[in-house]
Length: 308
Length: 303
Image 1: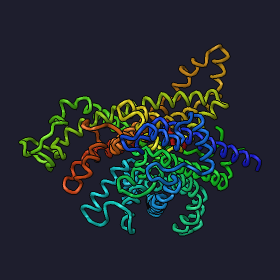
Image 2: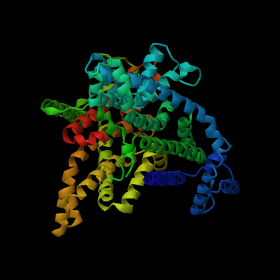
Image 3: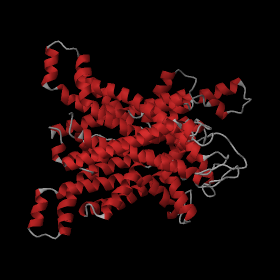
Protein backbone atom coordinates (compact mmCIF):
# COMPACT_ATOMS: atom_id res chain seq x y z
CA UNK A 1 0.00 0.00 0.00
CA UNK A 2 2.81 2.40 0.85
CA UNK A 3 4.42 1.86 -2.52
CA UNK A 4 1.12 2.68 -4.17
CA UNK A 5 0.93 5.98 -2.30
CA UNK A 6 4.52 6.71 -3.25
CA UNK A 7 3.79 5.89 -6.84
CA UNK A 8 0.75 8.16 -6.91
CA UNK A 9 2.76 10.90 -5.25
CA UNK A 10 5.43 10.66 -7.92
CA UNK A 11 2.79 10.73 -10.66
CA UNK A 12 1.09 13.72 -9.09
CA UNK A 13 4.40 15.55 -8.84
CA UNK A 14 5.06 14.87 -12.51
CA UNK A 15 1.61 16.13 -13.45
CA UNK A 16 2.18 19.36 -11.53
CA UNK A 17 5.61 19.89 -13.10
CA UNK A 18 4.11 19.22 -16.52
CA UNK A 19 1.44 21.85 -15.90
CA UNK A 20 4.05 24.36 -14.78
CA UNK A 21 6.15 23.69 -17.89
CA UNK A 22 3.14 24.05 -20.15
CA UNK A 23 2.14 27.37 -18.63
CA UNK A 24 5.70 28.68 -18.79
CA UNK A 25 6.04 27.77 -22.45
CA UNK A 26 2.70 29.42 -23.15
CA UNK A 27 3.89 32.57 -21.41
CA UNK A 28 7.20 32.69 -23.29
CA UNK A 29 5.71 31.93 -26.70
CA UNK A 30 2.88 34.40 -26.36
CA UNK A 31 5.16 37.21 -25.14
CA UNK A 32 7.50 36.61 -28.04
CA UNK A 33 4.77 36.61 -30.63
CA UNK A 34 4.35 40.34 -30.97
CA UNK A 35 2.91 43.40 -29.29
CA UNK A 36 -0.87 43.29 -28.83
CA UNK A 37 -1.27 46.96 -27.95
CA UNK A 38 -1.39 48.36 -31.53
CA UNK A 39 -4.24 45.93 -32.25
CA UNK A 40 -6.32 47.64 -29.57
CA UNK A 41 -5.77 51.20 -30.72
CA UNK A 42 -6.61 53.19 -33.80
CA UNK A 43 -3.54 53.54 -36.05
CA UNK A 44 -3.11 57.25 -35.24
CA UNK A 45 -3.34 56.92 -31.44
CA UNK A 46 -0.90 59.15 -29.55
CA UNK A 47 2.06 57.76 -27.63
CA UNK A 48 0.43 58.50 -24.25
CA UNK A 49 -2.57 56.40 -25.20
CA UNK A 50 -0.28 53.51 -26.15
CA UNK A 51 1.48 53.72 -22.80
CA UNK A 52 -1.80 53.80 -20.89
CA UNK A 53 -3.06 50.61 -22.56
CA UNK A 54 0.28 48.86 -22.08
CA UNK A 55 0.18 49.80 -18.40
CA UNK A 56 -3.39 48.53 -18.07
CA UNK A 57 -2.32 45.18 -19.46
CA UNK A 58 0.77 45.10 -17.25
CA UNK A 59 3.02 44.98 -20.29
CA UNK A 60 5.23 47.86 -19.10
CA UNK A 61 6.63 45.87 -16.20
CA UNK A 62 9.78 43.74 -16.40
CA UNK A 63 9.25 40.21 -17.77
CA UNK A 64 10.08 38.36 -14.52
CA UNK A 65 7.42 40.43 -12.74
CA UNK A 66 4.93 39.74 -15.54
CA UNK A 67 5.75 36.06 -15.22
CA UNK A 68 5.22 35.98 -11.45
CA UNK A 69 1.94 37.81 -11.80
CA UNK A 70 0.94 35.42 -14.58
CA UNK A 71 1.60 32.28 -12.50
CA UNK A 72 -0.08 33.77 -9.44
CA UNK A 73 -3.15 34.66 -11.47
CA UNK A 74 -3.36 31.19 -12.98
CA UNK A 75 -3.34 29.67 -9.52
CA UNK A 76 -6.35 31.83 -8.71
CA UNK A 77 -8.05 30.91 -11.98
CA UNK A 78 -7.59 34.41 -13.37
CA UNK A 79 -6.39 34.45 -16.97
CA UNK A 80 -6.84 38.16 -17.51
CA UNK A 81 -9.23 40.04 -19.77
CA UNK A 82 -9.66 39.09 -23.39
CA UNK A 83 -8.21 41.80 -25.62
CA UNK A 84 -10.69 41.06 -28.40
CA UNK A 85 -13.89 40.33 -26.46
CA UNK A 86 -13.17 42.79 -23.65
CA UNK A 87 -14.36 40.44 -20.91
CA UNK A 88 -12.57 38.01 -18.60
CA UNK A 89 -10.83 35.35 -20.71
CA UNK A 90 -12.07 32.60 -18.43
CA UNK A 91 -15.70 33.63 -19.04
CA UNK A 92 -15.20 33.79 -22.83
CA UNK A 93 -13.62 30.35 -22.93
CA UNK A 94 -16.35 28.91 -20.71
CA UNK A 95 -18.86 30.24 -23.24
CA UNK A 96 -17.21 28.23 -26.02
CA UNK A 97 -16.49 25.16 -23.92
CA UNK A 98 -19.92 23.47 -24.06
CA UNK A 99 -19.76 23.16 -27.87
CA UNK A 100 -16.33 21.53 -27.64
CA UNK A 101 -17.36 19.16 -24.87
CA UNK A 102 -20.50 18.22 -26.77
CA UNK A 103 -18.50 17.47 -29.91
CA UNK A 104 -15.76 15.56 -28.09
CA UNK A 105 -18.18 13.45 -26.06
CA UNK A 106 -20.28 12.64 -29.12
CA UNK A 107 -17.19 11.73 -31.12
CA UNK A 108 -15.92 9.59 -28.30
CA UNK A 109 -19.27 7.89 -27.67
CA UNK A 110 -19.68 7.20 -31.37
CA UNK A 111 -16.16 5.78 -31.55
CA UNK A 112 -16.75 3.42 -28.62
CA UNK A 113 -20.19 2.40 -29.79
CA UNK A 114 -18.87 1.36 -33.19
CA UNK A 115 -15.37 0.23 -32.35
CA UNK A 116 -15.90 -2.23 -29.48
CA UNK A 117 -18.55 -4.41 -31.21
CA UNK A 118 -16.64 -4.27 -34.50
CA UNK A 119 -13.38 -5.24 -32.83
CA UNK A 120 -15.07 -8.05 -30.93
CA UNK A 121 -16.78 -9.42 -34.05
CA UNK A 122 -13.54 -9.17 -36.02
CA UNK A 123 -11.74 -11.24 -33.42
CA UNK A 124 -14.44 -13.89 -33.10
CA UNK A 125 -14.82 -14.12 -36.89
CA UNK A 126 -11.12 -13.88 -37.53
CA UNK A 127 -10.06 -13.83 -41.21
CA UNK A 128 -13.67 -13.56 -42.38
CA UNK A 129 -14.57 -10.95 -45.01
CA UNK A 130 -16.04 -8.85 -42.20
CA UNK A 131 -12.73 -8.92 -40.35
CA UNK A 132 -10.78 -7.89 -43.45
CA UNK A 133 -13.13 -5.05 -44.36
CA UNK A 134 -13.31 -3.73 -40.81
CA UNK A 135 -9.58 -3.85 -40.21
CA UNK A 136 -8.86 -2.32 -43.63
CA UNK A 137 -11.18 0.55 -42.80
CA UNK A 138 -9.53 0.89 -39.39
CA UNK A 139 -6.08 1.17 -40.96
CA UNK A 140 -7.30 3.93 -43.24
CA UNK A 141 -9.05 5.68 -40.36
CA UNK A 142 -5.86 5.57 -38.32
CA UNK A 143 -3.65 7.14 -40.96
CA UNK A 144 -6.04 9.57 -42.70
CA UNK A 145 -5.32 13.25 -42.01
CA UNK A 146 -8.18 14.68 -39.93
CA UNK A 147 -8.66 17.76 -42.08
CA UNK A 148 -8.98 15.79 -45.30
CA UNK A 149 -11.35 13.28 -43.72
CA UNK A 150 -13.58 16.22 -42.81
CA UNK A 151 -13.41 17.63 -46.35
CA UNK A 152 -14.18 14.20 -47.80
CA UNK A 153 -17.19 13.75 -45.50
CA UNK A 154 -18.50 17.20 -46.43
CA UNK A 155 -18.08 16.42 -50.13
CA UNK A 156 -19.70 12.97 -50.01
CA UNK A 157 -22.38 13.16 -47.33
CA UNK A 158 -23.34 16.77 -47.40
CA UNK A 159 -22.72 18.23 -50.88
CA UNK A 160 -23.33 15.09 -52.96
CA UNK A 161 -25.79 13.09 -50.85
CA UNK A 162 -27.31 16.08 -49.07
CA UNK A 163 -27.82 14.20 -45.81
CA UNK A 164 -26.10 16.57 -43.42
CA UNK A 165 -25.34 20.31 -43.26
CA UNK A 166 -21.80 21.36 -44.21
CA UNK A 167 -20.98 23.41 -41.11
CA UNK A 168 -22.14 25.23 -38.01
CA UNK A 169 -23.83 24.08 -34.82
CA UNK A 170 -27.52 23.28 -34.54
CA UNK A 171 -29.56 20.11 -34.24
CA UNK A 172 -28.16 16.57 -34.07
CA UNK A 173 -27.66 16.50 -37.85
CA UNK A 174 -25.00 19.20 -37.46
CA UNK A 175 -23.15 16.96 -35.06
CA UNK A 176 -22.83 13.80 -37.17
CA UNK A 177 -20.05 14.70 -39.61
CA UNK A 178 -17.79 16.60 -37.17
CA UNK A 179 -18.17 13.79 -34.61
CA UNK A 180 -17.29 11.16 -37.22
CA UNK A 181 -14.28 13.18 -38.35
CA UNK A 182 -13.00 13.81 -34.85
CA UNK A 183 -13.74 10.28 -33.67
CA UNK A 184 -12.34 8.41 -36.69
CA UNK A 185 -8.85 7.99 -35.31
CA UNK A 186 -10.04 6.87 -31.88
CA UNK A 187 -12.60 4.57 -33.48
CA UNK A 188 -9.96 2.89 -35.64
CA UNK A 189 -7.47 2.52 -32.80
CA UNK A 190 -10.02 1.14 -30.34
CA UNK A 191 -11.38 -1.34 -32.90
CA UNK A 192 -7.91 -2.68 -33.69
CA UNK A 193 -6.96 -2.90 -30.06
CA UNK A 194 -10.21 -4.59 -29.03
CA UNK A 195 -9.63 -7.16 -31.74
CA UNK A 196 -6.10 -7.97 -30.65
CA UNK A 197 -7.00 -7.98 -26.95
CA UNK A 198 -9.87 -10.41 -27.54
CA UNK A 199 -7.69 -12.63 -29.74
CA UNK A 200 -5.08 -12.70 -27.01
CA UNK A 201 -7.63 -13.80 -24.41
CA UNK A 202 -9.17 -16.39 -26.74
CA UNK A 203 -5.77 -18.11 -26.81
CA UNK A 204 -5.72 -18.58 -23.03
CA UNK A 205 -6.12 -21.93 -21.33
CA UNK A 206 -9.20 -20.98 -19.36
CA UNK A 207 -11.04 -20.18 -22.58
CA UNK A 208 -10.16 -23.63 -23.85
CA UNK A 209 -11.49 -25.05 -20.58
CA UNK A 210 -14.70 -23.08 -20.90
CA UNK A 211 -15.18 -24.41 -24.41
CA UNK A 212 -14.26 -27.93 -23.36
CA UNK A 213 -16.91 -27.98 -20.70
CA UNK A 214 -19.45 -27.30 -23.41
CA UNK A 215 -20.27 -23.62 -22.94
CA UNK A 216 -21.90 -21.97 -25.92
CA UNK A 217 -19.46 -19.82 -27.91
CA UNK A 218 -21.46 -16.70 -27.10
CA UNK A 219 -21.19 -17.38 -23.38
CA UNK A 220 -17.47 -17.99 -23.73
CA UNK A 221 -16.98 -14.67 -25.45
CA UNK A 222 -19.25 -12.63 -23.21
CA UNK A 223 -18.39 -14.15 -19.83
CA UNK A 224 -14.78 -15.15 -20.09
CA UNK A 225 -13.28 -12.98 -22.77
CA UNK A 226 -14.75 -9.53 -22.58
CA UNK A 227 -13.83 -8.82 -18.99
CA UNK A 228 -10.26 -9.96 -19.40
CA UNK A 229 -9.80 -8.08 -22.62
CA UNK A 230 -11.17 -4.90 -21.09
CA UNK A 231 -8.00 -3.73 -19.36
CA UNK A 232 -5.87 -2.71 -22.35
CA UNK A 233 -8.97 -1.41 -24.08
CA UNK A 234 -9.85 0.86 -21.15
CA UNK A 235 -6.31 2.24 -21.09
CA UNK A 236 -6.09 3.04 -24.76
CA UNK A 237 -9.62 4.36 -24.81
CA UNK A 238 -8.87 6.88 -22.11
CA UNK A 239 -5.65 7.94 -23.81
CA UNK A 240 -7.54 8.35 -27.07
CA UNK A 241 -9.84 10.75 -25.30
CA UNK A 242 -6.82 12.90 -24.59
CA UNK A 243 -5.75 13.00 -28.23
CA UNK A 244 -9.27 14.02 -29.22
CA UNK A 245 -8.61 17.37 -27.58
CA UNK A 246 -5.84 18.12 -30.07
CA UNK A 247 -7.85 16.89 -33.06
CA UNK A 248 -10.69 19.20 -32.18
CA UNK A 249 -8.68 22.25 -33.29
CA UNK A 250 -8.65 21.02 -36.88
CA UNK A 251 -12.15 19.52 -36.84
CA UNK A 252 -13.72 22.66 -35.42
CA UNK A 253 -11.94 24.75 -38.05
CA UNK A 254 -13.09 22.55 -40.94
CA UNK A 255 -16.72 22.49 -39.80
CA UNK A 256 -16.87 26.06 -38.39
CA UNK A 257 -17.84 24.52 -35.04
CA UNK A 258 -17.96 27.21 -32.34
CA UNK A 259 -15.74 25.48 -29.78
CA UNK A 260 -12.53 26.36 -27.96
CA UNK A 261 -10.31 24.80 -30.65
CA UNK A 262 -11.52 27.24 -33.26
CA UNK A 263 -11.51 30.01 -30.66
CA UNK A 264 -7.85 29.28 -29.95
CA UNK A 265 -6.87 29.52 -33.62
CA UNK A 266 -8.78 32.76 -34.08
CA UNK A 267 -7.30 34.20 -30.89
CA UNK A 268 -3.80 33.46 -32.10
CA UNK A 269 -4.50 35.41 -35.27
CA UNK A 270 -5.95 38.22 -33.12
CA UNK A 271 -2.98 38.01 -30.72
CA UNK A 272 -5.49 37.66 -27.93
CA UNK A 273 -3.00 36.27 -25.38
CA UNK A 274 -5.34 35.72 -22.44
CA UNK A 275 -7.72 33.56 -24.46
CA UNK A 276 -4.89 31.52 -25.96
CA UNK A 277 -3.32 30.97 -22.56
CA UNK A 278 -6.63 29.93 -21.11
CA UNK A 279 -7.50 27.44 -23.88
CA UNK A 280 -4.05 25.87 -24.00
CA UNK A 281 -3.91 25.62 -20.24
CA UNK A 282 -7.37 24.07 -20.12
CA UNK A 283 -6.50 21.43 -22.76
CA UNK A 284 -3.27 20.58 -21.00
CA UNK A 285 -5.05 20.22 -17.65
CA UNK A 286 -7.67 17.97 -19.22
CA UNK A 287 -5.04 15.81 -20.88
CA UNK A 288 -2.90 15.48 -17.75
CA UNK A 289 -5.89 14.74 -15.51
CA UNK A 290 -7.03 12.04 -17.93
CA UNK A 291 -3.59 10.43 -18.04
CA UNK A 292 -3.28 10.55 -14.29
CA UNK A 293 -6.70 8.93 -13.87
CA UNK A 294 -5.80 6.20 -16.34
CA UNK A 295 -2.62 5.39 -14.42
CA UNK A 296 -4.59 5.28 -11.22
CA UNK A 297 -7.26 2.97 -12.61
CA UNK A 298 -4.69 0.78 -14.22
CA UNK A 299 -3.01 0.24 -10.87
CA UNK A 300 -6.35 -0.50 -9.24
CA UNK A 301 -7.60 -2.86 -11.96
CA UNK A 302 -4.43 -4.83 -12.42
CA UNK A 303 -2.42 -5.60 -9.29
CA UNK A 304 0.49 -6.75 -11.48
CA UNK A 305 0.94 -3.20 -12.76
CA UNK A 306 1.58 -1.82 -9.29
CA UNK A 307 5.17 -0.95 -8.57
CA UNK A 308 6.79 -3.18 -6.02
CA UNK B 1 12.16 0.38 -15.93
CA UNK B 2 10.76 2.84 -13.46
CA UNK B 3 7.38 1.15 -13.50
CA UNK B 4 5.48 -1.28 -15.62
CA UNK B 5 2.54 1.05 -15.91
CA UNK B 6 2.29 2.24 -19.47
CA UNK B 7 3.00 5.89 -19.87
CA UNK B 8 1.12 7.66 -22.66
CA UNK B 9 2.31 5.68 -25.64
CA UNK B 10 2.13 7.38 -29.00
CA UNK B 11 -0.71 5.85 -30.93
CA UNK B 12 1.67 4.69 -33.64
CA UNK B 13 3.36 2.36 -31.22
CA UNK B 14 0.06 0.71 -30.45
CA UNK B 15 -0.95 0.26 -34.06
CA UNK B 16 1.13 -2.87 -34.53
CA UNK B 17 -0.66 -4.74 -31.75
CA UNK B 18 -3.31 -6.00 -34.08
CA UNK B 19 -1.23 -8.18 -36.35
CA UNK B 20 0.78 -10.77 -34.50
CA UNK B 21 2.56 -12.82 -37.12
CA UNK B 22 4.81 -15.65 -36.24
CA UNK B 23 6.80 -18.27 -38.03
CA UNK B 24 8.79 -18.39 -41.24
CA UNK B 25 5.99 -17.82 -43.76
CA UNK B 26 4.73 -14.80 -41.83
CA UNK B 27 8.21 -13.31 -41.64
CA UNK B 28 8.75 -13.79 -45.36
CA UNK B 29 5.46 -12.08 -46.12
CA UNK B 30 6.35 -9.22 -43.79
CA UNK B 31 9.67 -8.84 -45.55
CA UNK B 32 7.89 -8.60 -48.91
CA UNK B 33 5.49 -6.01 -47.50
CA UNK B 34 8.40 -3.94 -46.18
CA UNK B 35 10.02 -4.13 -49.62
CA UNK B 36 6.80 -2.99 -51.28
CA UNK B 37 6.42 -0.10 -48.84
CA UNK B 38 10.06 0.85 -49.35
CA UNK B 39 9.55 0.83 -53.11
CA UNK B 40 6.58 3.17 -52.71
CA UNK B 41 8.65 5.61 -50.67
CA UNK B 42 11.48 5.35 -53.19
CA UNK B 43 9.06 6.02 -56.05
CA UNK B 44 7.79 9.08 -54.19
CA UNK B 45 11.36 10.33 -53.75
CA UNK B 46 12.01 9.82 -57.47
CA UNK B 47 8.82 11.71 -58.37
CA UNK B 48 9.81 14.55 -56.06
CA UNK B 49 13.34 14.78 -57.46
CA UNK B 50 12.22 14.51 -61.08
CA UNK B 51 9.27 16.89 -60.70
CA UNK B 52 10.57 19.40 -63.30
CA UNK B 53 10.71 16.67 -65.93
CA UNK B 54 7.70 14.61 -64.84
CA UNK B 55 5.18 17.42 -64.41
CA UNK B 56 3.39 18.05 -67.69
CA UNK B 57 3.08 21.79 -66.99
CA UNK B 58 4.46 24.62 -64.90
CA UNK B 59 2.70 24.22 -61.51
CA UNK B 60 2.34 27.98 -61.03
CA UNK B 61 1.31 28.95 -64.58
CA UNK B 62 -2.16 30.47 -64.44
CA UNK B 63 -4.69 30.41 -67.20
CA UNK B 64 -7.87 32.45 -66.97
CA UNK B 65 -9.52 30.62 -69.85
CA UNK B 66 -8.76 27.20 -68.39
CA UNK B 67 -10.11 27.83 -64.89
CA UNK B 68 -11.90 25.10 -62.91
CA UNK B 69 -11.69 22.59 -65.76
CA UNK B 70 -12.79 19.06 -64.86
CA UNK B 71 -10.30 16.25 -65.52
CA UNK B 72 -9.95 16.26 -69.30
CA UNK B 73 -7.72 15.17 -72.16
CA UNK B 74 -8.17 18.44 -74.00
CA UNK B 75 -8.89 21.56 -71.98
CA UNK B 76 -9.88 25.02 -73.17
CA UNK B 77 -6.18 25.84 -73.56
CA UNK B 78 -5.68 22.79 -75.77
CA UNK B 79 -3.70 20.87 -73.13
CA UNK B 80 -4.52 17.69 -71.27
CA UNK B 81 -5.42 18.16 -67.58
CA UNK B 82 -5.71 14.61 -66.31
CA UNK B 83 -6.70 15.76 -62.82
CA UNK B 84 -8.37 19.04 -63.88
CA UNK B 85 -7.36 22.61 -63.12
CA UNK B 86 -7.87 24.82 -60.07
CA UNK B 87 -9.49 28.24 -59.60
CA UNK B 88 -6.51 29.93 -61.26
CA UNK B 89 -6.35 27.49 -64.15
CA UNK B 90 -3.24 25.69 -62.85
CA UNK B 91 -2.81 22.04 -63.71
CA UNK B 92 -3.63 19.88 -60.64
CA UNK B 93 -1.50 16.91 -61.72
CA UNK B 94 1.58 19.11 -62.05
CA UNK B 95 0.89 20.69 -58.68
CA UNK B 96 0.42 17.31 -57.00
CA UNK B 97 3.78 16.16 -58.42
CA UNK B 98 5.54 19.32 -57.22
CA UNK B 99 3.72 19.02 -53.91
CA UNK B 100 5.55 15.73 -53.27
CA UNK B 101 8.77 17.77 -53.05
CA UNK B 102 7.44 19.88 -50.20
CA UNK B 103 5.99 16.91 -48.34
CA UNK B 104 9.15 14.83 -48.54
CA UNK B 105 11.55 17.69 -47.92
CA UNK B 106 9.75 18.79 -44.77
CA UNK B 107 9.02 15.19 -43.77
CA UNK B 108 12.58 13.88 -44.01
CA UNK B 109 14.16 17.01 -42.54
CA UNK B 110 11.76 16.97 -39.58
CA UNK B 111 12.56 13.31 -38.96
CA UNK B 112 16.28 14.14 -38.86
CA UNK B 113 15.74 17.04 -36.44
CA UNK B 114 13.42 15.08 -34.15
CA UNK B 115 15.57 11.96 -34.35
CA UNK B 116 18.79 13.74 -33.41
CA UNK B 117 17.20 15.50 -30.45
CA UNK B 118 15.19 12.51 -29.29
CA UNK B 119 17.99 9.97 -29.66
CA UNK B 120 20.45 12.17 -27.80
CA UNK B 121 18.06 12.88 -24.94
CA UNK B 122 16.94 9.25 -24.77
CA UNK B 123 20.55 8.05 -24.60
CA UNK B 124 21.41 10.57 -21.92
CA UNK B 125 18.30 9.76 -19.89
CA UNK B 126 18.87 6.03 -20.08
CA UNK B 127 22.61 6.12 -19.56
CA UNK B 128 22.87 8.73 -16.83
CA UNK B 129 19.61 7.94 -15.07
CA UNK B 130 18.78 9.77 -11.85
CA UNK B 131 17.63 13.35 -11.90
CA UNK B 132 18.72 13.84 -15.53
CA UNK B 133 16.44 10.98 -16.52
CA UNK B 134 13.60 12.39 -14.44
CA UNK B 135 13.97 15.86 -15.92
CA UNK B 136 14.02 14.63 -19.52
CA UNK B 137 11.06 12.33 -19.06
CA UNK B 138 9.07 15.04 -17.32
CA UNK B 139 9.67 17.38 -20.23
CA UNK B 140 8.58 14.61 -22.59
CA UNK B 141 5.40 14.16 -20.54
CA UNK B 142 4.75 17.88 -20.55
CA UNK B 143 5.19 18.09 -24.28
CA UNK B 144 2.93 15.12 -24.88
CA UNK B 145 0.36 17.03 -22.83
CA UNK B 146 0.66 20.05 -25.08
CA UNK B 147 -1.68 20.12 -28.07
CA UNK B 148 0.84 20.11 -30.92
CA UNK B 149 -1.19 22.31 -33.24
CA UNK B 150 -1.38 25.11 -30.69
CA UNK B 151 2.35 24.92 -30.00
CA UNK B 152 3.07 25.00 -33.72
CA UNK B 153 0.77 27.94 -34.35
CA UNK B 154 2.24 29.86 -31.45
CA UNK B 155 5.80 29.44 -32.68
CA UNK B 156 4.96 30.05 -36.33
CA UNK B 157 3.08 33.20 -35.36
CA UNK B 158 6.31 34.49 -33.79
CA UNK B 159 8.78 33.46 -36.47
CA UNK B 160 6.55 33.65 -39.53
CA UNK B 161 5.88 30.70 -41.81
CA UNK B 162 8.96 29.42 -43.63
CA UNK B 163 10.55 26.09 -44.50
CA UNK B 164 13.11 26.11 -41.65
CA UNK B 165 10.47 27.08 -39.08
CA UNK B 166 8.14 24.36 -40.30
CA UNK B 167 10.89 21.73 -40.15
CA UNK B 168 12.04 22.72 -36.67
CA UNK B 169 8.50 22.90 -35.28
CA UNK B 170 7.47 19.51 -36.68
CA UNK B 171 10.81 17.97 -35.70
CA UNK B 172 10.58 19.36 -32.16
CA UNK B 173 7.09 17.95 -31.81
CA UNK B 174 8.27 14.41 -32.45
CA UNK B 175 11.38 13.79 -30.39
CA UNK B 176 9.53 12.11 -27.53
CA UNK B 177 8.97 8.71 -29.13
CA UNK B 178 12.69 8.32 -29.93
CA UNK B 179 13.64 9.38 -26.43
CA UNK B 180 11.19 7.06 -24.71
CA UNK B 181 12.10 3.96 -26.67
CA UNK B 182 15.85 4.60 -26.62
CA UNK B 183 15.79 5.29 -22.91
CA UNK B 184 14.08 2.02 -22.07
CA UNK B 185 16.40 0.04 -24.34
CA UNK B 186 19.51 1.74 -23.00
CA UNK B 187 18.35 1.05 -19.45
CA UNK B 188 18.30 -2.64 -20.29
CA UNK B 189 21.58 -2.63 -22.22
CA UNK B 190 23.43 -0.60 -19.63
CA UNK B 191 23.01 -3.25 -16.98
CA UNK B 192 24.49 -5.93 -19.25
CA UNK B 193 27.83 -7.35 -18.31
CA UNK B 194 29.55 -6.41 -21.54
CA UNK B 195 29.08 -2.73 -20.73
CA UNK B 196 30.69 -3.22 -17.31
CA UNK B 197 33.48 -5.15 -18.99
CA UNK B 198 34.20 -2.31 -21.41
CA UNK B 199 34.26 0.20 -18.57
CA UNK B 200 36.58 -2.08 -16.63
CA UNK B 201 38.89 -2.24 -19.62
CA UNK B 202 39.03 1.55 -19.65
CA UNK B 203 36.54 2.23 -22.46
CA UNK B 204 34.99 5.69 -22.34
CA UNK B 205 31.26 6.36 -22.16
CA UNK B 206 31.34 7.81 -25.66
CA UNK B 207 32.90 4.63 -26.97
CA UNK B 208 30.32 2.44 -25.26
CA UNK B 209 27.51 4.55 -26.68
CA UNK B 210 28.74 4.76 -30.27
CA UNK B 211 30.24 1.29 -30.63
CA UNK B 212 27.95 -0.83 -28.50
CA UNK B 213 24.69 0.86 -27.62
CA UNK B 214 23.81 2.64 -30.87
CA UNK B 215 24.20 -0.45 -33.09
CA UNK B 216 21.95 -2.31 -30.70
CA UNK B 217 19.16 0.25 -30.88
CA UNK B 218 19.53 1.13 -34.55
CA UNK B 219 16.65 -1.03 -35.70
CA UNK B 220 14.29 0.60 -33.18
CA UNK B 221 15.42 3.99 -34.45
CA UNK B 222 14.65 3.05 -38.05
CA UNK B 223 11.18 1.85 -37.09
CA UNK B 224 10.35 5.03 -35.20
CA UNK B 225 11.81 7.21 -37.96
CA UNK B 226 9.51 5.59 -40.52
CA UNK B 227 6.45 6.11 -38.33
CA UNK B 228 7.59 9.67 -37.66
CA UNK B 229 7.96 10.31 -41.39
CA UNK B 230 4.28 9.55 -41.87
CA UNK B 231 3.39 11.79 -38.94
CA UNK B 232 5.59 14.65 -40.19
CA UNK B 233 4.11 14.55 -43.68
CA UNK B 234 0.59 14.74 -42.24
CA UNK B 235 1.65 17.50 -39.83
CA UNK B 236 3.08 19.60 -42.66
CA UNK B 237 -0.11 19.13 -44.69
CA UNK B 238 -2.26 20.04 -41.68
CA UNK B 239 -0.32 23.24 -41.00
CA UNK B 240 -0.37 24.17 -44.69
CA UNK B 241 -4.12 23.52 -44.68
CA UNK B 242 -4.49 25.95 -41.77
CA UNK B 243 -2.47 28.52 -43.73
CA UNK B 244 0.55 28.25 -41.43
CA UNK B 245 2.77 25.98 -43.45
CA UNK B 246 4.01 26.31 -46.99
CA UNK B 247 2.80 29.58 -48.46
CA UNK B 248 1.24 29.99 -51.90
CA UNK B 249 2.04 29.83 -54.74
CA UNK B 250 4.37 26.95 -53.78
CA UNK B 251 2.24 23.85 -54.24
CA UNK B 252 1.75 21.66 -51.17
CA UNK B 253 -0.88 18.97 -50.72
CA UNK B 254 -2.40 20.51 -47.60
CA UNK B 255 -2.47 23.97 -49.16
CA UNK B 256 -4.17 22.61 -52.27
CA UNK B 257 -6.92 20.98 -50.19
CA UNK B 258 -7.45 24.36 -48.52
CA UNK B 259 -7.57 26.22 -51.87
CA UNK B 260 -10.18 23.82 -53.20
CA UNK B 261 -12.43 24.09 -50.15
CA UNK B 262 -14.43 26.99 -51.54
CA UNK B 263 -15.02 25.15 -54.80
CA UNK B 264 -15.90 21.79 -53.26
CA UNK B 265 -19.41 21.93 -54.67
CA UNK B 266 -18.53 22.95 -58.23
CA UNK B 267 -14.96 21.63 -58.66
CA UNK B 268 -14.45 18.72 -56.29
CA UNK B 269 -11.19 17.65 -57.97
CA UNK B 270 -9.14 20.57 -56.62
CA UNK B 271 -9.23 19.32 -53.02
CA UNK B 272 -9.84 15.65 -53.61
CA UNK B 273 -6.81 14.58 -55.66
CA UNK B 274 -4.07 16.08 -53.49
CA UNK B 275 -5.97 14.87 -50.42
CA UNK B 276 -6.17 11.31 -51.72
CA UNK B 277 -2.46 11.28 -52.58
CA UNK B 278 -1.69 12.53 -49.08
CA UNK B 279 -3.94 9.89 -47.54
CA UNK B 280 -2.32 7.12 -49.57
CA UNK B 281 1.17 8.32 -48.69
CA UNK B 282 0.34 8.51 -45.00
CA UNK B 283 -1.23 5.04 -45.07
CA UNK B 284 1.62 3.32 -46.92
CA UNK B 285 4.43 5.00 -45.00
CA UNK B 286 2.89 4.28 -41.59
CA UNK B 287 2.11 0.69 -42.57
CA UNK B 288 5.69 0.27 -43.73
CA UNK B 289 6.76 1.40 -40.28
CA UNK B 290 4.46 -1.21 -38.69
CA UNK B 291 5.81 -3.96 -40.93
CA UNK B 292 9.38 -2.92 -40.26
CA UNK B 293 8.69 -3.16 -36.56
CA UNK B 294 7.25 -6.66 -36.95
CA UNK B 295 10.33 -7.61 -38.90
CA UNK B 296 13.13 -5.93 -36.99
CA UNK B 297 11.93 -5.51 -33.50
CA UNK B 298 8.86 -7.41 -32.35
CA UNK B 299 9.47 -6.31 -28.77
CA UNK B 300 8.49 -2.74 -29.64
CA UNK B 301 5.00 -3.93 -30.45
CA UNK B 302 3.82 -4.37 -26.90
CA UNK B 303 5.37 -1.20 -25.56
